[in-house]
Amino acid sequence: KAGVTQTPRYLIKTRGQQVTLSCSPISGHRSVSWYQQTPGQGLQFLFEYFSETQRNKGNFPGRFSGRQFSNSRSEMNVSTLELGDSALYLCASSLVAQANTEAFFGQGTRLTVV
Amino acid sequence: AQTVTQSQPEMSVQEAETVTLSCTYDTSENNYYLFWYKQPPSRQMILVIRQEAYKQQNATENRFSVNFQKAAKSFSLKISDSQLGDTAMYFCAFMKRTASKLTFGTGTRLQVTL
Image (cartoon, rainbow over all chains, first blue to last red; front, side, top):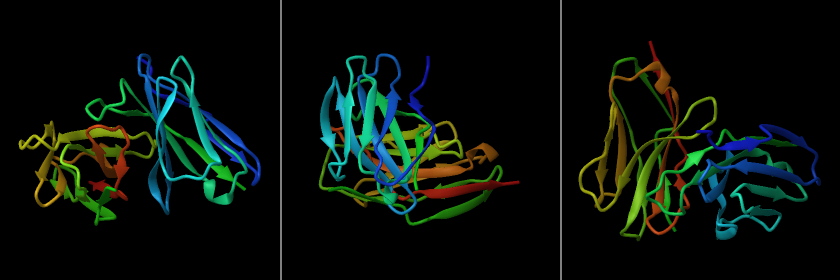
């Protein structure tokens, strides 16, 4: 069974550009969550999607957005990139959006903004 | 809002020895889950162990066990017979029972030495 796949693994962008990151969950999983990991702020929740609907959102500016497709694949988009957006972005998938189901993480996308 | 505190930024243990990682949390919720995740250099977050707050019995998974003190809001992880492969960042995390958003602590870097 394939795990959670995040693409690309590494990305370098220029300040002001926009970027799209992709997450393919484990087959059959319908819930996808996104987290940002930085040395200064640690792991912070971005948003969660279930059955193509955003169910929960963290405290991030509107430049951060996401969506989920009918096949449960999810994308997150960051517009007008800032240096502080440099981070490891992690995606997690679970069967359903409940705490008693295990969340499986991908290996992340390392975004560097220069 | 929930907070998770890990007061040990770094720890070291010799192979085959036992080590305990500390975690405290703050919440007004009564129904929740607590987790320990491991993040090796490969960056992929791996679930180590999970505890349901309404269960008094401490969770165990092979060499990993927890000491869950609900009244004290404490959730420590004990690793027995430490192995070199246990070298990683360890994150304590909280999740409300009715949600799927994880709130992470700042992590403890564990080094297992020969």
